[in-house]
Length: 163
Image 1 (cartoon, helix red, strand yellow):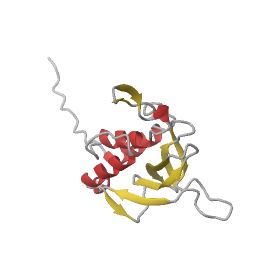
Image 2 (image 1 turned 180 degrees about the vertical axis):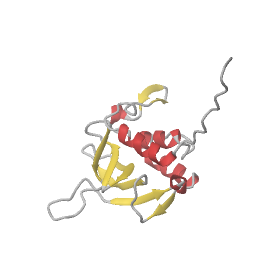
Image 3 (image 1 turned 90 degrees about the vertical axis):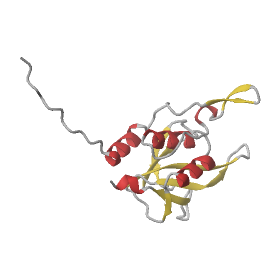
Image 4 (image 1 turned 90 degrees about the horizontal axis):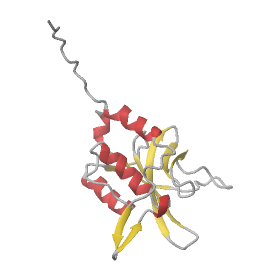
């Protein structure tokens, strides 16, 4: 005769799981490539990790149903954040989404950057140099005169992370 063991009630904890997943993503090649048909040609639109910041951020957020879909551009990710109850704030807190000022690269392309704040002035975002998510200072440190190397232009927060 079997014992009737009741199943435990398990309630997922969003915030600590979210932060753990961000930390566990450091160094992952998972977000390095995204292929699309561009004018009939199979193209890696993230250029083997050079342009993977939006893919990284939106993929993590989609896993937690905090955005509607996965994106490959910062512009479309920001639009989805706003459509998904993320709002601009001045409060830098762990779990928030950071948008950094646009930067001009050697090939004259201009790109905005997106990533996650994880607390203690640390952020995780995709590195175009290493082509994987990396841990870094929220402004990549300071230049010789004490200015942020890359300024944060926007901080987004979602109240679902507070539950």
